[in-house]
Length: 162
Image (cartoon, rainbow, N blue to C red; front, side, top):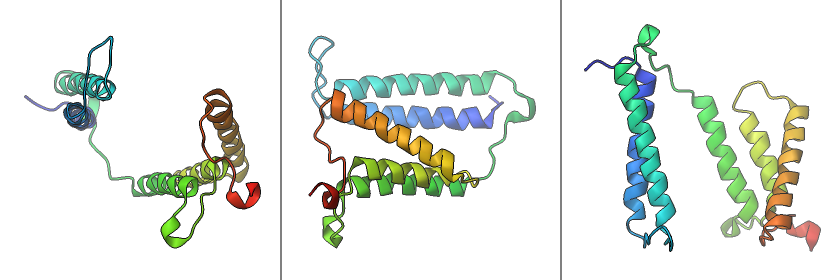
């Protein structure tokens, strides 16, 4: 069988591999059943759904003809780097690094750091829209996690709250 779309083939293959890995990893937990779900139930179902979606995408990449074969391009190293760094920065700002003496900066600073660094992935950084987006995300996260869900997350840095 001939691959008609390389992009769909490899993305479908990735979905299948990740879905099977999640489903397999979930079996180490108590799965339970639909009425009494265990901690492994959701990851198992999510893994199965992801693997099925990947299989459908994989099948269509072998059956549906596309113009030019949709070849895979070069790796986008800049976005990959900035998105990974943004997530690492979010974790460090949210929880701190006690081993090097960096205190937790709280949820608001972590969201601002995440938004600013991840917006640099495009190569066309614009300060005003990025700060507006960060403020909206921070306010929405505050409302959702602190006010509505009542989670005990540090919101501000310790040197501000005392």
